[in-house]
Length: 70
Image 1: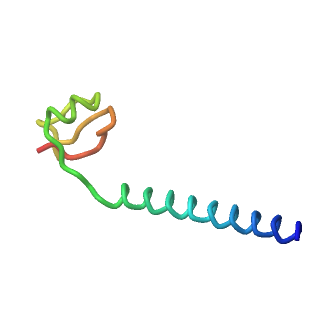
Image 2 (image 1 turned 90 degrees about the vertical axis):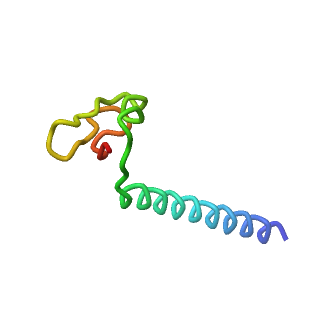
């Protein structure tokens, strides 16, 4: 009886750990595949500087680094 409880606990832990890893991989893939366009104020709020006069109009620095500024 005790072995069954231990075995069930091991299976449950492995299943939950697998779900956690799958969720993290999905979240990472979703954030990398969607390019976004931000406003100059959103770029500044994220700690960056909108480089509007340069090719591509990108946000430089901060949390919005590399995103296109519209």
